[in-house]
Image 1 (cartoon, rainbow, N blue to C red):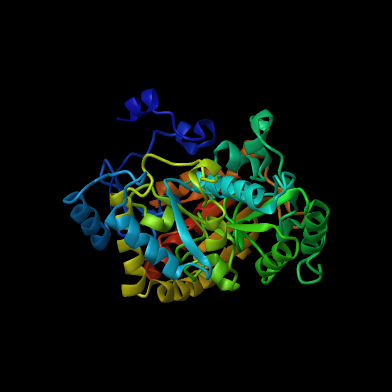
Image 2: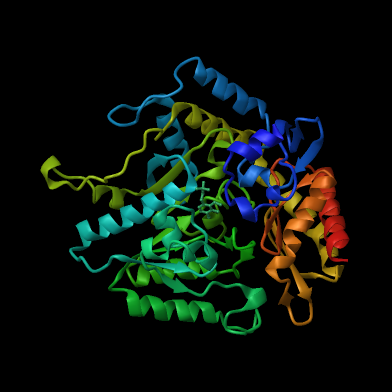
Length: 444
Ligand code: PMP
């Protein structure tokens, strides 16, 4: 199997993955927070299978929901037809979403949910604002919103941009609050939130050319768990209102409980104009995504047929009944098992365990929000000098962890932990211990 995998499969980010250095780890089964490979070895799933399996693997309620739906219908189009799980899920999502989000547009991955939000914001503004000038977007440095052309365009990680730059549209980049490496050389607490001052200046200057701002609320995940200072998100909402710029909250990574609230926007009581969801929406069972928006925006797409105000977007698997059935069960588990309470409790335990990492010579910063943590490794702690990319320190640490029975993820030199929400205190201890030992084994 390993040979055939190497011969036939084009893995994402091929050369950047540790996979090319070792034989691929081929997973056969999962249960709770554990994955098993084809040789029967067990691994703690420290990244919830790329931030998706919120209740762990083989969750009986989700297994049964998908099986039951299989006995009815596996797929039917949402183009002109509807289906029961898609309707019920839309109602349930609206019930838990930030206020004002009352329309659900389904798709099947996070990048596309963002792409849809961008197209909606652009078209809505053109149709309803009476201007053809507000065509641009504001986004943040270090942001990650996906891999499609539009979502890369509003991304802020240069590595992803460079190769495709001729294909991308320009988005105005605001500095992100990466407090450990403040772009303005200031220190947190005494900075007066200079990033917000600069953001406001950018918004003021660009208000006539910009239709929307895109933000990962509270934390930039793929950049290495860059946690924003308290109040930042709420202030961004205020600025969007002041400068008449739509706010798109990309909750693809942080949504569904990871911060200890259902959505990151809830933590600061923020109601965005659009919200994108994927990953945890179906508990990691089937590909599903959604772009939620307000009645006001939806109504901008209504009108007589000849007016062509329609939203020109539709996917074959939009509102797939199997995926929606899994997502309904996923939301029910949140309620029935008081998952958010568990996350808040287990996150406190995780915070305590992470404290010891600060004693390691090459740990520069430990960042955490809810159950998401990023441990930034540095060559020199005093000067915060990063390890050179060719040293592949992050990859070496996660390979070491794998040998010790833990699956975690490197984002450059940041080690990312984002286990399923269902993780127990004992599993958190194991997750932290193996990570700690692996960092020490690699960096000394
Ligand atoms: N937005 C954010 C914030 C993400 O973290 C990701 C994926 N990591 C995406 C969008 C893209 O989602 P997908 O991989 O499902 O296309």
